[in-house]
Image 1: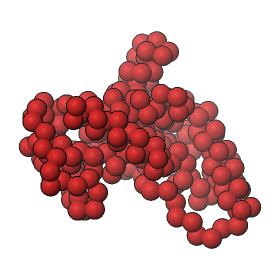
Image 2 (image 1 turned 60 degrees about the vertical axis):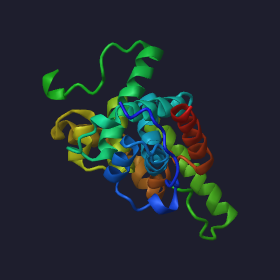
Image 3 (image 1 turned 180 degrees about the vertical axis):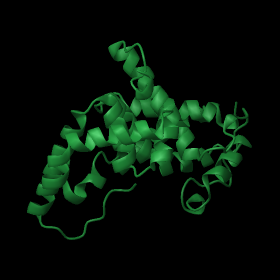
Amino acid sequence: MVRESVHTEGAPPGGALASEPDESLVRRVVAGETACFEALMRRHNERVYRTVRAVLGEDADAEDVMQQAYVAAYQHLDRFEGRSRFSTWLTRIAINEAYARLRKRQRVEAAPWEDETTMADEPAAAGPTPEQIAARVEIQGLLERAVDTLSISNRTVFVLRSIEGLSTAETAEVLKISEEAVKTRLHRANEALRLWLEEQVGGAVKDAFHFYRPRCDAVVSHVMARLIH
């Protein structure tokens, strides 16, 4: 586990740490600079949120599961060996927490990602008109509803590959499936969403499931309170 002592002095959560590599921040947290964990959370909040929501299919439990994932990551931070990227390691923990919640909620017996071979900041205003803003919000809503119609396994791959931009290899590592399975599931997801992606969504795909600043602040605040007190 991370050391029990907590030292927060000299480790501002933003600015000065913004460009520091994940691995360096991890070492500082393990050494006792707990405040550095806030910088890691803010850096990866959007990916964690999108990943958790992809598994759960709704917002209801997403923030609670995010907090559990961060606490679990913090508690086992000294086990991070750097063999994969920190973001990959953290995303895997988030997925495990999300599936634990899903099993609890739906009594799912087995993880749906069995290998098939064996069976952010808010977008800055650029001066669009109210009509353009309304249209974009409507398209994003349509996309989110369309993605929610996918199976859990296909939806998770789609979010990680097409929205989060992970490579095939990274997605396979996170989900512990083969790269071929990633390609197959992404193809199935894209086929199911083809009309949405080609005819309606356009550039709005990158804006789907944003985890905006107020919610980011709330999750970070709750997690830091649990870690420090």
